[in-house]
Structure formats: structure tokens, C-alpha cells
Length: 189
Image 1 (cartoon, helix red, strand yellow):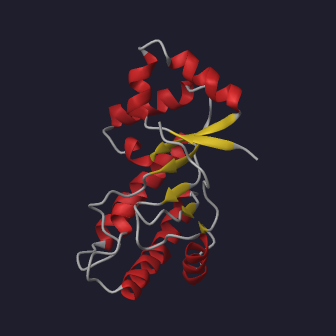
Image 2 (cartoon, one colour):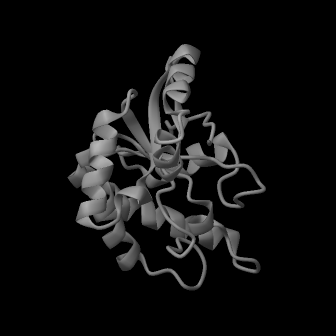
């Protein structure tokens, strides 16, 4: 089994020049880290920013094998103000850039996007989430990327807060690229 580390690239850009870069990588490798998980949103800048990120990934001492923070809170999946066309347009671009960086899967935690708004019907929110995942499946397939549904703790999310609940929703979605697997333990730096 390998474990990875969920990092924010902005933090690493700062550390590269601060003298702790080599110590950070040495410590990670000594502890047995096998890969990095980066926020996919970092890949969504301009072409120049994406080229800089691609160079960063190529130079990193550990491979990028997964992506986190798929959707922002503004990209609602549940509630009365869902715009799936807009969200799926973003997903197409994000998954294509993730594939270009070589990582797979994209972890769908995204508590802000999927959190059920206060007063909104929880069963309806589950149906909305499953509809999104069914539409996301072919987008992920076209990009050659897996989507890992991530249960989160109840302080972050109120839609999928257990492995059993996540597995039930994945079974309901029934798409081969929307899976129960995921990054089970992440440490954020």
C-alpha cells in the first residue's frame, strides 16, 4: 500500500525558495510517501500558469497521482441554484488538464459544492448529486479519468459522511468511473 500527501502548490512554491524544500521532500520520502495529491483547481489558470504547473509537476521528486478539491462552493451540486451545464463545462476542462498532468483519480469531496443547504430536502439533494455523477461519468470517460467519491466528516459536509453512504450513492450512480475507491487518509500541509 502506498500513501500520498495532499499538498497546496502555492505553499510549495513558497517553500522552494525558503530553504526547507529539500528537507520537506527528504522527510516525505523517508516517511514512505509515494505520491502527491494536488488541488485540481490549481490547473485551471491561464495557459502560462498551467505551463508553470506542468513544469513544477515534472520537477517534483514524487509523482502526482491524484487530485483533490475538485469543485468550489460556487459550483453547487445540491439545492435550488444548481447549474449543471456550467459545472460540467468546468469539469471537462479540469479533467483534461488533470489528465495532461498525469494524475488519476480526481477526488470528489467538494463539501462546499455538495453540502445540502439548510431547509432543503436531503433526499432531493441525494438525487441531484447522483444526477450530477451520472452526467459526470461520460465526461470522466472522455478524459480517461476516474472520479473517487470521498466521504467527509460531518463538520465539513452533510451529504456523504460515511463510507457506507458513499458506497450506496456510487452504486446508485452505477457508472464504472465513479468509484468507491479514493484517497482514504490525507494530510494537508
